[in-house]
Every structure is written in C-alpha cells, then in structure tokens.
Figure 1 (tube, protein in one colour):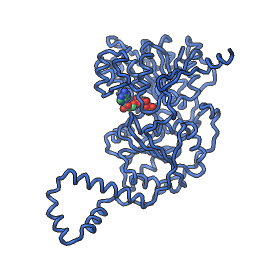
Figure 2 (cartoon, helix red, strand yellow):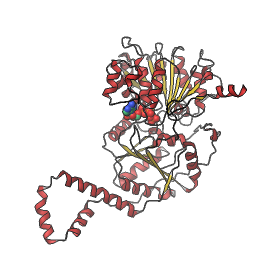
Figure 3 (cartoon, helix red, strand yellow):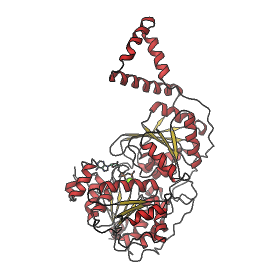
Length: 514
Ligand SMILES: Nc1ncnc2c1ncn2[C@@H]1O[C@H](COP(=O)(O)OP(=O)(O)OP(=O)(O)O)[C@@H](O)[C@H]1O
Ligand SMILES: [Mg+2]
C-alpha cells in the first residue's frame, strides 16, 4: 500500500486528494507520479477505471506555478465529454493550490471560451479540433506550456487527430514534458512516441487480463431480429442501477432509444450528431439517475467515469478488441463490480474469439433469455421493493385494510394478486429496427503481436469531433516536431510491483545483436 504522502506531494495537493476520498494510490499512480514529477516523458498504461486521470493530473498540477497566470499545461482528449470530466477532476486536484483548469471543446460557444481564456487558466483540457481553432484565432497561446498530456492517445490516433496533435505541439516549446495515457496501447503508439517524445519510459501496470477482474463478462448469440427482445428481457432480469447500451451507428442509437422508450424504459441516446447542449443534458440526466439507460455510440466508450453504471450491453459487437475493453470499462470502476454482455449474431463469432484472445479473458456464453426469466426477474424486483417497505415499517395506514382483506381472502391469493399488480410485466410492443449487417470478417494485421493497423476508415462511430472517415495519418516522417528527433528510440518499458521490468523493442533488438 502506498499513501499519497509517501509520494512526496505538497500539503495543498494532499489536502485535495484527501478531500476527494482517495486513501491510497492506485498502482498506476504509485508508479507514474514520482517519475512524472521528475519530468520524464512517459507512456502510462493501466486497466480502465484505475485512476489514470489523477496519475497524470497530480504531477501536472504539482508542477504548475500558481502565481503565473499563463497556460502551463495542456491535456488533449478525444471527446468533449471526456475533456469536461478531466477538467473537473483537475479542478478538484488543484483546488487548494488555486490551480484553474479550463475545458475547451467543440460545440460550446467560442466567444464564451475566449472570455474564459482571458481569465488566465493555468491548464486547459481540450479536444484537438477546438484547440487548433483557438490557436488559429490567436486566442490561445501555448508558449509557456511545459507539460502536455494526451489522454486516450490511441483513440486520438484512430480518430485521425494526428495532424492536429502535431500542429498543437508545434505551438508548444520543444523543451516540454509529454505524457501519454490509455488502457490500451496498440503498436502505432510507439510511432507517436518517437515523433513527439524523448527518452520515453513506458509504465505498464501489468495484469493477466486487459479488462478488470471485477467485471463479469458474458455473451449471447442471437439473430439480428431477436436482439431487441433479448435486450429488454435482459434489462428486466438484471434491473440495472444504471446501464449503458452501445450501438454501432448513430441511427442505431436513435432507433434503440425510441424503441426502449416505447417499451417503458427511461432511455436517452448520445452520439456525435446531437447538438452539444443535448449531449450535455443527456449525460447530466444519466449521472443524476433521471434516466436509467444511456444508449450510445463509441463516443461514450472512452474515459467516461459515471458512478453507478452497473451494466454494459454491447447491443452490437464492438469494432475491435480495444473498443470492447473501453466500452465494458464504463462499469467495474475504482474497485467496484460490474457486468457486461455482448450480443453477437451467428456470423460474428470469430470477432468474439479475437476479443477473447487479445484481452486474454474467456467470455462466458449465456442462453437467450426467455420471457419466463424476464417475468421472474421483475418479480424479484417487486419482492425486493415489498421487503424494503416492510423493513422501513411505515405501514400503519394500511394495516387495518390488510386485516379486513385477510378475513375474507386467503393470504396466498391476496399476496399473489398484489405481486401481479406491482410487477411490471414484460412489454412486447412490436419494434422495428433497421437491419445492421454483421461486422465484416477482417483479419487484423499483426494480431498475434497485439498490434497491427486498426484504421477505422469510414466506420461511422459518432465520435466527438470525428471527421467522418478521414484518415489523416501520414506515413513516416515527422515534419512537425523539430527538435525531438531520436524520440522514443531509447525507450524503456517498466512495470513494477505487480509489474515486471521489460525492455522495449529497440533494447530487445540490441540484446539480440549482442
Ligand atoms: N487513489 C484512488 N482511490 C480511490 N479512488 C480513486 C483513486 N484514483 C482515482 N479514483 C477514482 O476512480 C475512478 C476512475 O478513475 P479514472 O477515470 O481516472 O480512471 P482511468 O484509469 O482513467 O479509466 P479509463 O481507462 O476508463 O479512462 C474515478 O472516479 C476516480 O475519482
Ligand atoms: Mg481515463
């Protein structure tokens, strides 16, 4: 166990961390904070929900000079919601030191952002597109930035943000401290590190599986046409506290949301085509438990930390194993338990095997839920509610009537009738969803090596600022960064504690040569 005071933090930060209820550092925090405080460029990889935000947020804030009202740190995130969330966490961490963090993201009034930027934040958290926009308008100056963080770095690559990141980094002094974080680090990240970082240290919290153990994982094989009934039955069986249902496309999300509401569930959808105020409203309602089901594209798959998400339903199988890891990682966070189920149509079974292979975790098959199971599930809920009311004991006003009823009827019939009235019977309102073709069989290049090229081409992910299919990566060369040549070539991979020290590819090759 490592406490935060053992990590040599200032009293102001220790006070904030204590206020946030963190008692001990998580492994990724324990391993990255001291190194990051020394200014070492690093790549941090650890499972979803294990506190990577504070792992970069704490050293970042510790290094800020509160007296200077210049922007000294910038965090880039792939989606608007994540930028807001990270901004909130940094504001909490920096609370007692007086560090101000400002989120800037697309879809929000630029005029308002310009005004806020004039207020002198120490750190900005932004989505790449909007950050570039401000740079071009000269409303954002990065010449005093000494620390850069790319949160969900691999996703920003997938989304084609590489050139934007390059442009942003061209505006940051070359003598800077750069950190990359994600739960998944495919091979191409190495290339990114070579371009933008120097002497990079890879800190990987090693675990036998890519997903956290506390998430129970199942799959169900269903025909496309049966999927929706299977979904609502599962919802009735599980009665989730909060659930996220992932669909493949924006249309799918819209249709699923409407269909769920028709069957009596309180659901709202979120995807990249919705106006930002609607996206904000939906997420707020979900966080406040005003709605119980959030239907989303992968826009909600990365980084979002919403407490109470007990169930994740992959209504459509995710595009790749990394996406699977992030989607299901919306539950089972910060040591809590969670449940995730993935729907596959018969032709998609190979994709499931690939997920199992890459995540090193067996996913158990469950049978298609029957109507009977759904009724049973709902009855269980009713019984729970009844017993809770009994425990609370505030039933005086009803007792007289109950006794009178019992004089005329037998108790079993009476209670059965009460259960029937109180139980929400499965709703079978007919639903039509547009047919989605199964995920195409696609071999991942370099799959065995856990890497490969995972460009998503025209896949309509509904992501934050995803520019519809534009793959904007350049092959080779690093025209942007002037002084960081050589970059990650001397990189080391370090894993400690539950982690082990491993050499990088380059170091391994050196050894072979010897
Ligand atoms: N040391 C700690 N003790 C207790 N809770 C913590 C600690 N560090 C972080 N948390 C909480 O754990 C939750 C998950 O943290 P965070 O969102 O940073 O995870 P993550 O590793 O970035 O996950 P993802 O890969 O999904 O982005 C948050 O609610 C955060 O406040
Ligand atoms: Mg995160």
